Length: 372
Image 1 (cartoon, helix red, strand yellow):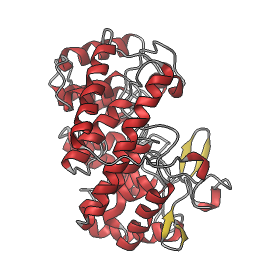
Image 2 (cartoon, rainbow, N blue to C red):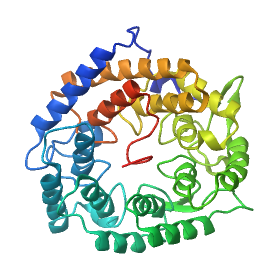
Image 3 (cartoon, rainbow, N blue to C red):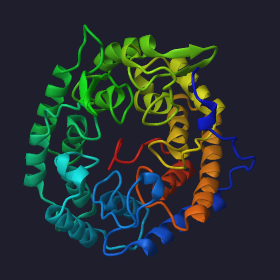
């Protein structure tokens, strides 16, 4: 079973309309601006947080919202807002952010990356340097909490020495002759995750520039070929290597499954296999979980933009835009159900707004993964 049909829904019959997409993008930005209170946004029940959680990080919190709004041309005072959020974080960090304090998506490193990106007075290059160093040997060995994320942060912020040292240690932990992946301690157990958020694909992506594409391709292609689940012209990947996989756990999400694998590593695998992953995403359809990036319709659709970049085939742009059209409808349905938007970068509406712009511009870069 390559995917679970009950996790997907039928694609909308409505075709792509660029003016409608631009209007939906603007509406999401306007709503986010209006919902902000002192630099924070209301929680959403699907994110399992309270009404006013005051989260600060890139993944769930204010840093992600501020970064996205800044990217989308919002009129918010991003520099001052980020400075206030960073002050709040340091005074009373949320438990998740406190446990993973140096990390990229959940901790202070991400806040400092955004501070540098938006030109905030809170930007602190030396503090960022120290956090990257502190996180070099985090036992998760994945992007969200571990060193791959802070490796990307160091590279994007021009911390050459910290970037190269973190990448060197990450490469050293890559088990070339055993599993072919990384052995991780995550969620209280030892595992070998494959996707970009928690495993192999994200780790390899963090090594770009420190190892040559030739070396990466030589080491990546055999792992993806060996772990791929195939059926006719379709391919998917389990969340973890088959040796530790739970039966029936296969998903079609950016965080776990073909969408994230192909988006992150499509240029490092056989093109035929990447295309098989893309076909699986198309046939399985939009995700019922929501419209967002990590485990939603927009994140899956972003893989079509990557395949457009790899092949030049306009069919993939058409498919990306069809998923975008569906995501617009999902945002509207969920807002009606809950009575407000979903205000996070990686699970919420602002990620959909970024995806709509990417579909207009045919831009395959995933936010905070491929660029900041």
